[in-house]
Length: 278
Ligand code: AMP
Ligand code: ZN
Ligand code: FE
Ligand code: FE
Image (cartoon, rainbow, N blue to C red; front, side, top):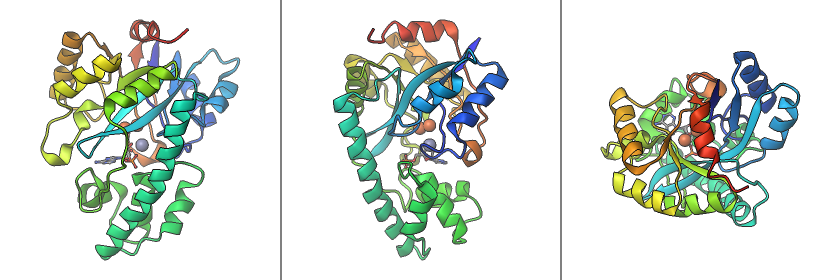
């Protein structure tokens, strides 16, 4: 039995509802599903309601935005208390920061000759924290690129001409906030860090510092990692005593990854869970 520990919904930049994700997880026969929308825990209550009586375990979580030297670092928080004061305060700040940043990114596109409208971006995001995929969709609608992948490749990936960083906390503070909320912190897709800068993934010394702050797991088996990256981060996990996790990073139609296409075995989930605050 396995767990998908990394999924998105319309509560951030995924295109599917929480109800649909829960029902799909049940249909796939998953044992558990982590709800990890970007910088929010707003989908978690609905997930528990939908999963009630199905036998599917729900892990309430978030994919928390941090940054190191101006590059995105994502930290998965699992079993977090969405009502924790310090975490809630930072998540509120982050969502507000995302609005300012989306305006700045829209201005970059306008400067590049692609007349994206901020109102349209907000419309696409709806109640979700506004993110780059929402902006990418607006750019495609304006004819600025054939599809969202092209928008990221040409403009929006970290370091691209329309990229604006988020003014997020550093990765160690992210781990502390997630732990403070009773949760277990897992470094998401370390191999995707600073791709554009030519660096190959998160430097080991930064991961070591995060371990000092209480990091428990590392998503070595992210669908977008190459086999070499998977091996490398498995080695890092062994050396630093981290639990290796996997999740689909499902985003509905916004990404090719299918729900349940990458999963973590129960034994690893149990190891993670020993670090939860009772
Ligand atoms: P944001 O939280 O606004 O920084 O956007 C992050 C999200 O954008 C990620 O979760 C991915 O869904 C998407 N994303 C980031 N970089 C890329 C990329 N190079 N190609 C495609 N999607 C990306
Ligand atoms: Zn996303
Ligand atoms: Fe991510
Ligand atoms: Fe994600």
